[in-house]
Amino acid sequence: MTQTPTSASPAPTQKMNQRRVAFAAVIGTTIEWYDYFTYSTAAALVFAHLYFAPAGEGIGQMLAFATIGISFLFRPLGAFLSGHFGDRLGRRAVLVVTLVTMGVATALIGLIPTYETIGITAPILLILLRIVQGLSAGGEWGGAALLAVEHADEDKRGRAGSYPQLGVPLGMLLSSGVIALMTGVISPGEAFMEWGWRIPFLLSVVLIGVGYWVRRAVEDTPVFQEMTAETAKRKAPILVLFKKHLSLVLVAALIFAGNNASGYMTTGGFVTKYATDPVGFDQTDVLLAITFGSFVWLVSTAASGVLADHIGRVKTYVLGFLILIVTAFPLFWLIDTGDLGLLYLALGIFSIGLGLSYGPQAALYVELFPASIRFSGVAISYALGAVLGGAFAPTIAQGLLQATGTTASVSLYLLVMSAISLLAVSLVRDRKGIDLSVANEAEQSSGMWRIAKR
Image 1 (cartoon, rainbow, N blue to C red):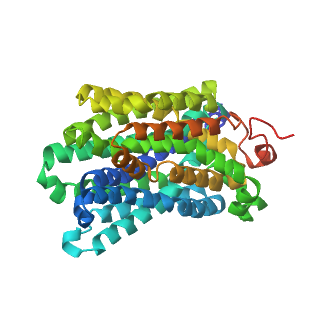
Image 2 (tube, rainbow, N blue to C red):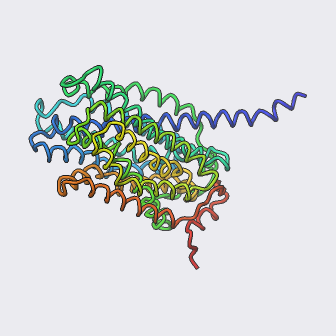
Image 3 (cartoon, helix red, strand yellow):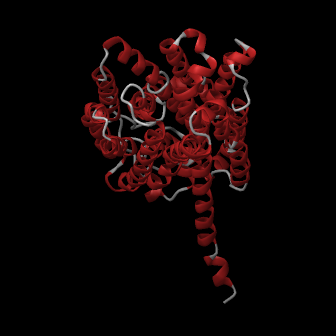
Protein backbone atom coordinates (compact mmCIF):
# COMPACT_ATOMS: atom_id res chain seq x y z
CA MET A 1 0.00 0.00 0.00
CA THR A 2 2.86 2.32 0.68
CA GLN A 3 4.31 1.82 -2.81
CA THR A 4 1.22 2.81 -4.81
CA PRO A 5 1.43 6.60 -4.29
CA THR A 6 5.16 6.51 -5.03
CA SER A 7 4.74 4.65 -8.31
CA ALA A 8 1.87 6.90 -9.35
CA SER A 9 3.61 10.14 -8.45
CA PRO A 10 5.81 10.67 -11.56
CA ALA A 11 2.86 11.14 -13.92
CA PRO A 12 1.24 14.05 -12.03
CA THR A 13 4.69 15.58 -11.51
CA GLN A 14 5.45 15.33 -15.22
CA LYS A 15 2.09 16.85 -16.15
CA MET A 16 2.64 19.71 -13.72
CA ASN A 17 6.08 20.36 -15.18
CA GLN A 18 4.66 20.35 -18.73
CA ARG A 19 2.03 22.90 -17.71
CA ARG A 20 4.74 25.04 -16.14
CA VAL A 21 6.81 24.76 -19.32
CA ALA A 22 3.82 25.69 -21.48
CA PHE A 23 3.15 28.77 -19.34
CA ALA A 24 6.82 29.75 -19.43
CA ALA A 25 6.92 29.41 -23.23
CA VAL A 26 3.78 31.48 -23.69
CA ILE A 27 4.56 34.22 -21.17
CA GLY A 28 8.15 34.62 -22.33
CA THR A 29 7.43 34.95 -26.03
CA THR A 30 4.42 37.17 -25.29
CA ILE A 31 6.66 39.62 -23.44
CA GLU A 32 9.33 39.49 -26.14
CA TRP A 33 6.84 40.17 -28.91
CA TYR A 34 4.94 42.79 -26.93
CA ASP A 35 8.24 44.67 -26.88
CA TYR A 36 8.82 44.07 -30.59
CA PHE A 37 5.35 45.05 -31.74
CA THR A 38 5.24 48.13 -29.53
CA TYR A 39 8.30 49.36 -31.39
CA SER A 40 6.76 48.55 -34.79
CA THR A 41 3.56 50.46 -34.01
CA ALA A 42 5.49 53.44 -32.68
CA ALA A 43 7.58 53.39 -35.87
CA ALA A 44 4.37 53.66 -37.87
CA LEU A 45 2.78 56.39 -35.75
CA VAL A 46 5.40 58.65 -34.14
CA PHE A 47 9.06 57.88 -34.89
CA ALA A 48 9.13 59.53 -38.32
CA HIS A 49 8.07 62.82 -36.71
CA LEU A 50 10.11 62.56 -33.50
CA TYR A 51 13.38 61.08 -34.77
CA PHE A 52 13.55 61.44 -38.56
CA ALA A 53 11.69 64.70 -39.25
CA PRO A 54 14.60 66.43 -41.08
CA ALA A 55 14.38 63.77 -43.82
CA GLY A 56 10.85 64.86 -44.76
CA GLU A 57 7.55 63.04 -44.33
CA GLY A 58 7.90 60.29 -46.98
CA ILE A 59 11.60 59.50 -46.47
CA GLY A 60 11.24 59.90 -42.71
CA GLN A 61 8.52 57.26 -42.65
CA MET A 62 10.61 54.88 -44.71
CA LEU A 63 13.57 55.43 -42.34
CA ALA A 64 11.32 54.74 -39.36
CA PHE A 65 10.18 51.47 -40.96
CA ALA A 66 13.80 50.70 -41.89
CA THR A 67 14.78 50.71 -38.20
CA ILE A 68 12.41 47.75 -37.82
CA GLY A 69 14.40 45.90 -40.45
CA ILE A 70 17.81 46.82 -39.01
CA SER A 71 17.15 44.70 -35.93
CA PHE A 72 16.42 41.70 -38.16
CA LEU A 73 19.92 41.91 -39.59
CA PHE A 74 21.27 41.23 -36.10
CA ARG A 75 18.91 38.36 -35.40
CA PRO A 76 21.21 35.80 -37.06
CA LEU A 77 24.06 36.92 -34.77
CA GLY A 78 21.75 36.55 -31.77
CA ALA A 79 20.74 33.13 -33.09
CA PHE A 80 24.39 32.10 -33.54
CA LEU A 81 25.22 33.08 -29.97
CA SER A 82 22.11 31.61 -28.38
CA GLY A 83 22.35 28.46 -30.48
CA HIS A 84 25.99 27.92 -29.49
CA PHE A 85 25.37 28.46 -25.78
CA GLY A 86 21.94 26.84 -25.83
CA ASP A 87 23.38 23.59 -27.21
CA ARG A 88 26.27 23.68 -24.73
CA LEU A 89 24.93 25.32 -21.56
CA GLY A 90 21.20 24.71 -21.75
CA ARG A 91 17.97 26.12 -23.17
CA ARG A 92 16.67 27.75 -19.98
CA ALA A 93 19.76 29.87 -19.24
CA VAL A 94 19.68 31.41 -22.71
CA LEU A 95 15.97 32.15 -22.46
CA VAL A 96 16.39 34.08 -19.21
CA VAL A 97 19.14 36.22 -20.76
CA THR A 98 17.18 36.99 -23.94
CA LEU A 99 14.08 37.97 -21.97
CA VAL A 100 15.89 40.41 -19.68
CA THR A 101 17.95 41.91 -22.51
CA MET A 102 14.88 42.55 -24.66
CA GLY A 103 12.94 44.09 -21.78
CA VAL A 104 15.70 46.46 -20.71
CA ALA A 105 16.27 47.66 -24.29
CA THR A 106 12.55 48.29 -24.72
CA ALA A 107 12.24 50.28 -21.51
CA LEU A 108 15.25 52.43 -22.48
CA ILE A 109 13.65 53.24 -25.85
CA GLY A 110 10.84 54.83 -23.86
CA LEU A 111 13.38 57.21 -22.30
CA ILE A 112 15.23 58.42 -25.43
CA PRO A 113 14.92 62.21 -25.99
CA THR A 114 13.71 63.34 -29.41
CA TYR A 115 15.71 64.71 -32.35
CA GLU A 116 14.55 68.21 -31.45
CA THR A 117 16.17 67.81 -28.00
CA ILE A 118 19.52 66.09 -28.67
CA GLY A 119 19.82 66.08 -32.46
CA ILE A 120 21.36 63.20 -34.40
CA THR A 121 22.17 61.37 -31.15
CA ALA A 122 18.47 60.55 -30.75
CA PRO A 123 18.04 58.32 -33.86
CA ILE A 124 21.48 56.78 -33.21
CA LEU A 125 20.41 55.70 -29.72
CA LEU A 126 17.12 54.42 -31.14
CA ILE A 127 18.93 52.29 -33.70
CA LEU A 128 21.44 50.94 -31.15
CA LEU A 129 18.67 49.81 -28.80
CA ARG A 130 16.79 48.33 -31.75
CA ILE A 131 19.91 46.29 -32.54
CA VAL A 132 19.91 44.97 -28.96
CA GLN A 133 16.27 43.96 -29.45
CA GLY A 134 17.29 42.10 -32.61
CA LEU A 135 20.07 40.19 -30.85
CA SER A 136 17.63 39.16 -28.13
CA ALA A 137 14.84 38.14 -30.51
CA GLY A 138 17.33 36.03 -32.47
CA GLY A 139 17.67 33.63 -29.55
CA GLU A 140 14.28 33.88 -27.91
CA TRP A 141 12.08 31.88 -30.22
CA GLY A 142 14.46 28.98 -30.78
CA GLY A 143 14.91 28.42 -27.06
CA ALA A 144 11.19 28.67 -26.34
CA ALA A 145 10.39 26.22 -29.15
CA LEU A 146 12.84 23.64 -27.83
CA LEU A 147 11.70 24.14 -24.25
CA ALA A 148 8.09 23.42 -25.23
CA VAL A 149 8.55 20.60 -27.77
CA GLU A 150 11.35 18.67 -26.05
CA HIS A 151 9.28 18.53 -22.86
CA ALA A 152 6.12 17.34 -24.66
CA ASP A 153 4.65 13.87 -25.13
CA GLU A 154 5.34 12.42 -28.58
CA ASP A 155 1.74 12.68 -29.77
CA LYS A 156 1.25 16.25 -28.51
CA ARG A 157 4.29 18.04 -29.89
CA GLY A 158 2.23 20.01 -32.41
CA ARG A 159 0.06 21.42 -29.65
CA ALA A 160 3.05 22.01 -27.35
CA GLY A 161 4.94 23.68 -30.18
CA SER A 162 2.07 26.11 -30.68
CA TYR A 163 2.61 27.53 -27.17
CA PRO A 164 5.61 29.71 -28.05
CA GLN A 165 3.78 30.60 -31.29
CA LEU A 166 0.86 31.92 -29.24
CA GLY A 167 3.22 34.52 -27.80
CA VAL A 168 3.28 36.35 -31.14
CA PRO A 169 -0.46 37.10 -31.45
CA LEU A 170 -0.70 37.53 -27.68
CA GLY A 171 2.15 40.03 -27.76
CA MET A 172 0.48 41.81 -30.66
CA LEU A 173 -2.87 41.72 -28.84
CA LEU A 174 -1.35 43.18 -25.68
CA SER A 175 0.69 45.79 -27.54
CA SER A 176 -2.08 47.04 -29.81
CA GLY A 177 -4.52 47.02 -26.90
CA VAL A 178 -2.25 49.12 -24.68
CA ILE A 179 -1.45 51.57 -27.47
CA ALA A 180 -5.15 51.85 -28.40
CA LEU A 181 -5.85 52.66 -24.74
CA MET A 182 -3.19 55.36 -24.85
CA THR A 183 -4.37 56.93 -28.14
CA GLY A 184 -8.08 56.70 -27.36
CA VAL A 185 -8.39 57.34 -23.63
CA ILE A 186 -5.29 58.23 -21.63
CA SER A 187 -3.31 60.42 -24.06
CA PRO A 188 -5.36 61.20 -27.17
CA GLY A 189 -4.17 63.54 -29.90
CA GLU A 190 -1.03 65.59 -29.20
CA ALA A 191 -0.58 64.07 -25.75
CA PHE A 192 0.19 60.70 -27.33
CA MET A 193 2.83 62.26 -29.58
CA GLU A 194 4.37 64.18 -26.66
CA TRP A 195 4.50 61.51 -23.94
CA GLY A 196 1.79 58.84 -24.28
CA TRP A 197 3.77 56.67 -26.73
CA ARG A 198 6.47 56.20 -24.08
CA ILE A 199 4.23 54.47 -21.54
CA PRO A 200 3.87 51.13 -23.41
CA PHE A 201 7.68 50.94 -23.62
CA LEU A 202 8.16 51.67 -19.94
CA LEU A 203 5.59 49.02 -18.98
CA SER A 204 8.09 46.44 -20.22
CA VAL A 205 9.89 46.78 -16.87
CA VAL A 206 6.94 45.16 -15.11
CA LEU A 207 6.72 42.38 -17.68
CA ILE A 208 10.43 41.57 -17.31
CA GLY A 209 9.93 40.70 -13.64
CA VAL A 210 7.01 38.39 -14.40
CA GLY A 211 8.81 36.59 -17.21
CA TYR A 212 12.05 36.20 -15.26
CA TRP A 213 10.25 34.65 -12.30
CA VAL A 214 8.35 32.20 -14.51
CA ARG A 215 11.33 31.03 -16.55
CA ARG A 216 13.66 30.61 -13.62
CA ALA A 217 11.23 28.05 -12.16
CA VAL A 218 11.35 25.74 -15.21
CA GLU A 219 13.71 22.79 -15.53
CA ASP A 220 15.86 22.39 -18.61
CA THR A 221 14.64 19.92 -21.24
CA PRO A 222 15.15 16.14 -20.95
CA VAL A 223 17.07 16.13 -24.25
CA PHE A 224 19.61 18.66 -22.96
CA GLN A 225 19.96 16.73 -19.72
CA GLU A 226 20.89 13.71 -21.85
CA MET A 227 23.34 15.82 -23.82
CA THR A 228 25.28 16.81 -20.71
CA ALA A 229 26.64 13.28 -20.54
CA GLU A 230 27.48 13.03 -24.24
CA THR A 231 30.65 14.01 -26.06
CA ALA A 232 28.49 15.77 -28.68
CA LYS A 233 28.01 18.53 -26.14
CA ARG A 234 31.69 19.47 -26.45
CA LYS A 235 31.63 19.88 -30.22
CA ALA A 236 31.05 23.21 -31.95
CA PRO A 237 27.35 22.86 -32.91
CA ILE A 238 27.32 25.70 -35.43
CA LEU A 239 30.22 24.24 -37.44
CA VAL A 240 28.51 20.85 -37.54
CA LEU A 241 25.24 22.48 -38.56
CA PHE A 242 26.67 24.33 -41.56
CA LYS A 243 28.91 21.48 -42.63
CA LYS A 244 26.17 18.84 -42.72
CA HIS A 245 22.81 20.64 -42.85
CA LEU A 246 23.25 23.98 -44.63
CA SER A 247 20.62 23.18 -47.28
CA LEU A 248 18.13 22.27 -44.55
CA VAL A 249 18.77 25.58 -42.77
CA LEU A 250 18.11 27.52 -45.98
CA VAL A 251 14.91 25.64 -46.81
CA ALA A 252 13.66 25.98 -43.21
CA ALA A 253 14.35 29.72 -43.41
CA LEU A 254 12.32 29.99 -46.63
CA ILE A 255 9.44 28.14 -44.96
CA PHE A 256 9.20 30.94 -42.42
CA ALA A 257 9.83 33.85 -44.80
CA GLY A 258 6.32 33.98 -46.32
CA ASN A 259 4.53 33.97 -42.99
CA ASN A 260 6.89 36.58 -41.55
CA ALA A 261 6.52 38.93 -44.52
CA SER A 262 2.73 38.61 -44.34
CA GLY A 263 2.65 39.02 -40.57
CA TYR A 264 4.71 42.18 -40.66
CA MET A 265 2.13 43.87 -42.88
CA THR A 266 0.08 44.17 -39.70
CA THR A 267 2.61 43.80 -36.87
CA GLY A 268 5.23 45.88 -38.66
CA GLY A 269 2.95 48.89 -38.83
CA PHE A 270 2.35 49.18 -42.59
CA VAL A 271 -1.37 48.44 -42.39
CA THR A 272 -1.64 50.76 -39.37
CA LYS A 273 -0.04 53.58 -41.32
CA TYR A 274 -1.83 52.90 -44.61
CA ALA A 275 -5.30 52.50 -43.11
CA THR A 276 -4.83 55.73 -41.17
CA ASP A 277 -3.23 57.72 -43.96
CA PRO A 278 -4.16 57.75 -46.83
CA VAL A 279 -7.35 55.65 -46.37
CA GLY A 280 -8.56 57.83 -43.47
CA PHE A 281 -9.54 55.49 -40.63
CA ASP A 282 -9.28 56.83 -37.10
CA GLN A 283 -6.00 55.78 -35.47
CA THR A 284 -7.65 54.12 -32.48
CA ASP A 285 -10.17 52.31 -34.72
CA VAL A 286 -7.30 50.80 -36.72
CA LEU A 287 -5.49 49.69 -33.56
CA LEU A 288 -8.67 48.05 -32.26
CA ALA A 289 -9.16 46.27 -35.60
CA ILE A 290 -5.58 45.00 -35.39
CA THR A 291 -6.31 43.86 -31.84
CA PHE A 292 -9.23 41.87 -33.24
CA GLY A 293 -6.97 40.44 -35.94
CA SER A 294 -4.51 39.46 -33.22
CA PHE A 295 -7.25 37.54 -31.42
CA VAL A 296 -8.15 35.66 -34.60
CA TRP A 297 -4.46 34.94 -35.14
CA LEU A 298 -4.26 33.63 -31.57
CA VAL A 299 -7.21 31.28 -32.04
CA SER A 300 -6.03 29.99 -35.42
CA THR A 301 -2.52 29.43 -34.06
CA ALA A 302 -3.88 27.37 -31.17
CA ALA A 303 -6.10 25.40 -33.57
CA SER A 304 -3.17 24.79 -35.91
CA GLY A 305 -1.21 23.09 -33.12
CA VAL A 306 -4.01 20.58 -32.61
CA LEU A 307 -4.46 20.21 -36.38
CA ALA A 308 -0.73 19.55 -36.83
CA ASP A 309 -0.97 16.60 -34.42
CA HIS A 310 -3.85 15.13 -36.44
CA ILE A 311 -3.02 15.74 -40.11
CA GLY A 312 0.67 16.58 -39.81
CA ARG A 313 2.79 19.71 -39.77
CA VAL A 314 3.30 20.04 -43.53
CA LYS A 315 -0.39 19.73 -44.47
CA THR A 316 -1.32 22.35 -41.89
CA TYR A 317 1.33 24.67 -43.31
CA VAL A 318 0.06 24.15 -46.86
CA LEU A 319 -3.48 25.09 -45.80
CA GLY A 320 -2.22 28.25 -44.13
CA PHE A 321 -0.13 29.40 -47.08
CA LEU A 322 -2.99 28.78 -49.51
CA ILE A 323 -5.19 31.08 -47.40
CA LEU A 324 -2.48 33.77 -47.38
CA ILE A 325 -2.14 33.52 -51.16
CA VAL A 326 -5.89 33.75 -51.74
CA THR A 327 -6.32 36.73 -49.36
CA ALA A 328 -3.25 38.77 -50.44
CA PHE A 329 -5.27 41.00 -52.79
CA PRO A 330 -8.62 41.08 -50.91
CA LEU A 331 -6.76 42.30 -47.78
CA PHE A 332 -6.18 45.74 -49.31
CA TRP A 333 -9.32 45.76 -51.44
CA LEU A 334 -11.38 45.59 -48.25
CA ILE A 335 -9.24 48.17 -46.44
CA ASP A 336 -9.56 50.58 -49.37
CA THR A 337 -13.35 50.66 -49.01
CA GLY A 338 -12.99 52.79 -45.88
CA ASP A 339 -15.64 50.66 -44.17
CA LEU A 340 -14.71 49.76 -40.59
CA GLY A 341 -16.57 46.44 -40.67
CA LEU A 342 -14.71 45.39 -43.82
CA LEU A 343 -11.41 46.39 -42.17
CA TYR A 344 -12.21 43.93 -39.38
CA LEU A 345 -13.16 41.29 -41.97
CA ALA A 346 -9.93 41.82 -43.92
CA LEU A 347 -7.69 41.46 -40.89
CA GLY A 348 -9.72 38.55 -39.52
CA ILE A 349 -9.53 36.39 -42.67
CA PHE A 350 -5.89 37.23 -43.26
CA SER A 351 -5.04 36.31 -39.67
CA ILE A 352 -6.47 32.79 -40.12
CA GLY A 353 -3.79 32.13 -42.73
CA LEU A 354 -1.15 33.65 -40.45
CA GLY A 355 -2.05 31.30 -37.61
CA LEU A 356 -2.21 28.12 -39.71
CA SER A 357 1.17 28.87 -41.31
CA TYR A 358 2.82 29.70 -37.99
CA GLY A 359 1.45 27.37 -35.34
CA PRO A 360 3.16 24.15 -36.61
CA GLN A 361 6.56 25.80 -36.96
CA ALA A 362 8.10 24.89 -33.60
CA ALA A 363 7.23 21.20 -33.94
CA LEU A 364 8.36 21.05 -37.57
CA TYR A 365 11.69 22.79 -36.87
CA VAL A 366 12.50 20.79 -33.74
CA GLU A 367 11.78 17.48 -35.51
CA LEU A 368 13.97 18.45 -38.49
CA PHE A 369 17.27 18.90 -36.63
CA PRO A 370 19.43 16.39 -34.70
CA ALA A 371 19.59 16.82 -30.91
CA SER A 372 23.18 18.06 -30.51
CA ILE A 373 22.75 20.94 -33.00
CA ARG A 374 19.01 21.48 -32.56
CA PHE A 375 19.10 24.85 -30.79
CA SER A 376 21.54 26.22 -33.38
CA GLY A 377 19.51 24.82 -36.30
CA VAL A 378 16.16 26.03 -35.05
CA ALA A 379 17.34 29.50 -33.96
CA ILE A 380 19.44 30.25 -37.05
CA SER A 381 16.76 29.01 -39.49
CA TYR A 382 14.18 31.19 -37.76
CA ALA A 383 16.46 34.24 -37.72
CA LEU A 384 17.38 33.89 -41.41
CA GLY A 385 13.72 33.40 -42.28
CA ALA A 386 12.90 36.61 -40.46
CA VAL A 387 15.59 38.49 -42.41
CA LEU A 388 14.31 37.12 -45.74
CA GLY A 389 10.67 37.70 -44.81
CA GLY A 390 9.76 40.41 -42.34
CA ALA A 391 12.98 42.40 -41.96
CA PHE A 392 12.17 45.07 -44.50
CA ALA A 393 8.62 44.05 -45.43
CA PRO A 394 7.06 47.33 -44.19
CA THR A 395 9.82 49.33 -45.90
CA ILE A 396 9.41 47.36 -49.14
CA ALA A 397 5.63 47.79 -48.96
CA GLN A 398 5.98 51.55 -48.38
CA GLY A 399 8.44 51.80 -51.27
CA LEU A 400 6.18 49.81 -53.59
CA LEU A 401 3.20 51.96 -52.65
CA GLN A 402 5.09 55.19 -53.30
CA ALA A 403 6.55 53.89 -56.57
CA THR A 404 3.37 52.43 -58.06
CA GLY A 405 0.64 54.37 -56.27
CA THR A 406 -1.33 51.17 -55.66
CA THR A 407 -1.43 48.40 -53.06
CA ALA A 408 -1.68 45.82 -55.86
CA SER A 409 2.12 45.77 -55.92
CA VAL A 410 2.17 45.11 -52.17
CA SER A 411 -0.34 42.28 -52.55
CA LEU A 412 1.73 40.73 -55.35
CA TYR A 413 4.80 40.89 -53.12
CA LEU A 414 2.94 39.03 -50.33
CA LEU A 415 1.60 36.45 -52.78
CA VAL A 416 5.07 35.68 -54.15
CA MET A 417 6.56 35.36 -50.65
CA SER A 418 3.82 32.95 -49.55
CA ALA A 419 4.21 30.91 -52.76
CA ILE A 420 7.96 30.54 -52.12
CA SER A 421 7.28 29.29 -48.60
CA LEU A 422 4.61 26.91 -49.87
CA LEU A 423 7.16 25.39 -52.25
CA ALA A 424 9.80 25.20 -49.50
CA VAL A 425 7.59 23.38 -47.00
CA SER A 426 6.62 20.92 -49.74
CA LEU A 427 10.28 19.85 -49.97
CA VAL A 428 10.66 18.60 -46.39
CA ARG A 429 9.37 15.38 -44.90
CA ASP A 430 6.81 15.49 -42.11
CA ARG A 431 8.62 13.75 -39.23
CA LYS A 432 5.78 13.83 -36.74
CA GLY A 433 6.51 11.57 -33.78
CA ILE A 434 10.22 11.00 -34.44
CA ASP A 435 12.30 10.19 -31.34
CA LEU A 436 14.01 13.45 -30.29
CA SER A 437 16.47 11.92 -27.82
CA VAL A 438 20.23 11.98 -28.17
CA ALA A 439 20.24 8.18 -28.55
CA ASN A 440 18.29 8.50 -31.82
CA GLU A 441 20.54 11.13 -33.40
CA ALA A 442 21.54 8.92 -36.33
CA GLU A 443 17.92 8.67 -37.51
CA GLN A 444 17.36 12.37 -36.86
CA SER A 445 20.24 13.17 -39.22
CA SER A 446 18.57 11.52 -42.21
CA GLY A 447 15.18 11.44 -43.89
CA MET A 448 14.54 15.20 -43.79
CA TRP A 449 13.61 15.51 -47.45
CA ARG A 450 10.38 14.47 -49.12
CA ILE A 451 12.33 13.28 -52.17
CA ALA A 452 15.00 10.95 -50.84
CA LYS A 453 18.51 11.15 -52.26
CA ARG A 454 19.53 7.97 -54.06
